Amino acid sequence: MVNKITWRRAGGVTEPGRYMFTFGWLTVTEKDLAIWQQFPDASFTLVELPAQVRESSEQVLSAARKAGNLYLDSYEKAVDRTTELQLKLAGLSQQEWLKSLIEAQVDVTRELAGSYTTTARSLLK
Image 1 (spheres, rainbow, N blue to C red):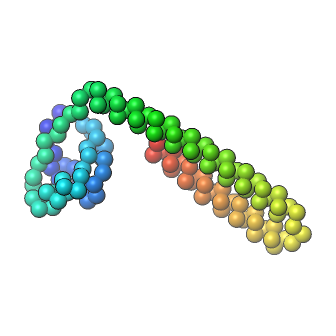
Image 2 (tube, rainbow, N blue to C red; image 1 turned 45 degrees about the horizontal axis):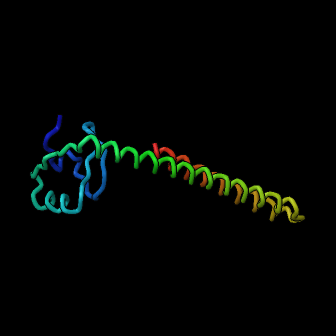
Image 3 (cartoon, helix red, strand yellow; image 1 turned 90 degrees about the vertical axis):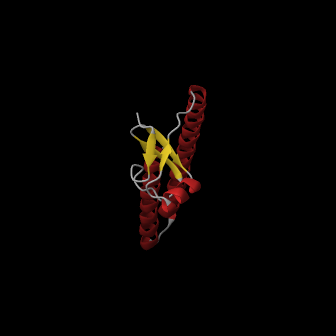
């Protein structure tokens, strides 16, 4: 078990945040970074959260993941509905260049939305 952590062991992080390590999650604050910048060899003592706090945190994270996935489901449906409407409108046009332009825009929209949701879902795991 790791009891102390140095800036080097933390990977020389430069931004405050929550980082996953082999021993668990490490939360780095602005104050931590300021100390490490002034004293690069300083080490911090790691504190394990009580079980009740860990369980509460996991419940909050689980609810946040569920809400995030629900949002992404709604976003995907909205993009699908919007792009289907755009394609229907393109089909009504008698201008081939306009049809082609709208179809290309729909393809780009779907590709970007797909990349966004795939990335977001991978972060919610």
